[in-house]
Length: 165
Image (cartoon, rainbow, N blue to C red; front, side, top):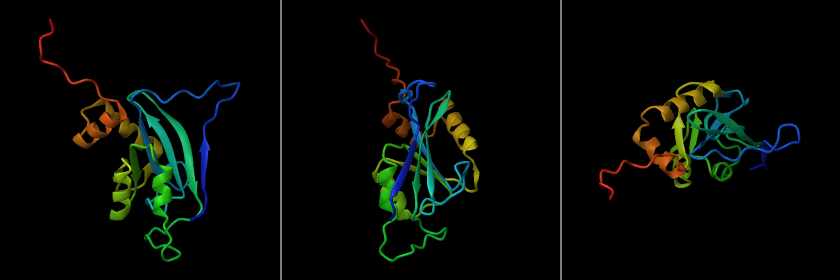
């Protein structure tokens, strides 16, 4: 597999230092070919847009790019060529991954790296994905997302029914 390229947001004198990752933010990766839309299968994605998402806002963290990818059918160009492991390694630290499709072995590698893959049935804008993620965070998240939130440190303490002295 070709090299992995990362484009990260860096500080400058005009805009000041890059903000620290917000407490409890989910790190979300989105499979994309054009950095505008969620429009790629996991194996064929040339890029992943990585965002930190909270209930109130989101911010682009980095774009991760790959030169050598599978085609949309999942076929590798050379037999025995592992295109999945480098992608999983590059996305470590993300909590969620949105893509159009993903194979079972790839999904298993992501889950073992504590990245929850989410398949989306059709292409949509990255902004729509981020807005939907915020809605899930603001309302009653499903159980799988509550687990991810707990791992990210984004959950509130459970109420205690014990009387304090």
